[in-house]
Image (tube, rainbow, N blue to C red; front, side, top):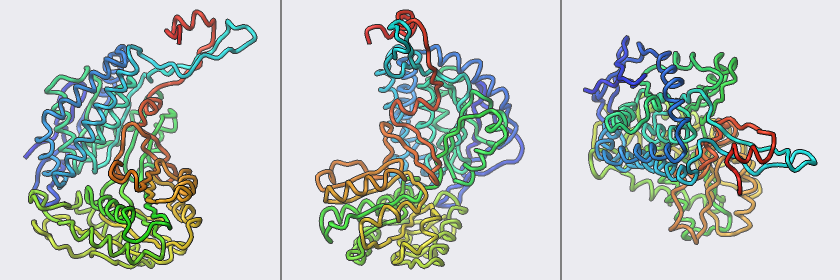
Length: 521
């Protein structure tokens, strides 16, 4: 059994105190242990501030990009080993493990490419210069420079590789050193990633540190120039915003939290059409990929009332093809939930929806037919589809996210009612639209955009060309308002702003152009 260690201040640290055991959620077998306490976190902060930060800030964007490219290559070179770690600790299918790991590899590679486009600068010049007075000599410029603190990243259990990479790639490119803390339950994969980075020697000293342990003492050491990026529950996000260290030092914080993502079928889409069938396929995939444990999984399905029965049948056909069980069996398409606690929460969430008037129309929260594995030992649940025929009166479906392979179909009568119904989710990461008519798309884009970080639109011409709705692309922003946390990550160079200070520089135009190296631009 593996003992997970932290990598802090340039060395591996086993920790001390109470032992936590990580388990395989498909078999219940113990796979790793770790000690949550006993780490010198003050030394880790000093190492980041005094060693990692200066090294990164002295590097050009192109040089930082070379680090990201090497990190991506290190993961790609040991991809099969990482897949095994994901399957062993998180209970993922091979396909879901690849989704996580390839997301990490691809995001690092993407930001290595962004670095090339930024070139040999060490900071950014934001926009063009501005004449500030009647004199053409007195000018103003805006620049963005790396913050001189530490980027603290608290990641969720569902993407132990991608979560590490999507935050670290942006911070490192911006020039900030990182201390990354994975969720304990699935930390084996993150540990394996860090092992590779250390073994391959791809990281500048102090650039990236890993804490496998408690986040509480880590957060107590935050200071003014530090930033905190968190992915997890809304309740924890609220708690973090109120931390004394965050408030007293005005620490920047980015939160990605709960999200009641919606999928909308346009009223003009006919039963059995290509777009109709694509809606059913996409929804089934988003419900079951990673066993529904994705922040971008769709939870609420808004369909015209006239085709609601047909859509229930179409979704049932798609979900019936999802074979559930131990992911070491090659025929399995959906593995267990990540932990027994998750299983209890999902079952309780389904009951909450039922108590509020929803009816289960496919699947069961208590019984699952496994093609492999032992239901008594694993955290297994099959896909569950519910239906609530009074979406305007419903409460729980618009207020409570069931973080598993669960969605609720909500029939609607008029398209103009849909944006308001969707907005009752109080802000989400993603809205999915399947439509055939430009007027429908226009109405939904305008109505949904204020409440979402991303609106994904599928029409007949792009059905075979579009990404999956839940795919987070590093070139586009990821985050959402309200319940979703109010944060924003990625988005190409947009993501760098969180880790940099924008400053107005005013003075003699000719001198500033030389100092900022913007002559001729």
